[in-house]
Image (spheres, rainbow, N blue to C red):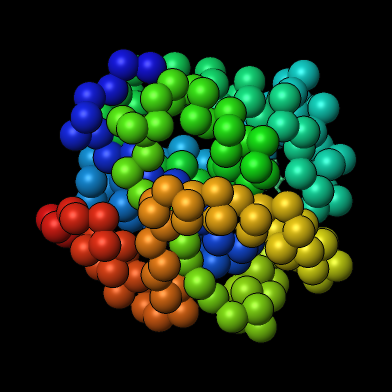
Length: 193
Ligand code: AMP
């Protein structure tokens, strides 16, 4: 990908139900760069009954992670698009250490790579409450718990990888939607328009 040095490349990081999707859309509107949700992309593929969709459907239903090689193809292709030249907001990727390394290689140079990894913190009880309230077809409580378990086990360790590079910004996700957006924009040095 081309991309210039002023490009705002953000990763939104946090457990399922922390508000990544909502904040990604709001930040996208405020900053003017696309929000890229791997979950939305996969759900669209499932809906379309494409080869990818048929491949990932059962894994997603179970609350497990789609394999890294498949995700690498999905993300590489998406980040090849011209619309990310001025930046992007990644929602739901990377979710494993392997994926973080893949993202590095896609951005090809970590110096002009990510601007920040925004970590949204929300208490576990609140996460379950929100996830149940969202009412998606795959959101029964057992699957929600499994997704949280997968997050703690496979995704949370990725934070250390980015902390070592001083990229992580911790934000309180347990406040009003507007307040969270403002806190993120302030933390990454963008004024809300
Ligand atoms: P999300 O909407 O981000 O919670 O994603 C919904 C589901 O899509 C996840 O529970 C996974 O099964 C799958 N998924 C989304 N992004 C990824 C990823 N980066 N790696 C593996 N699986 C993913």
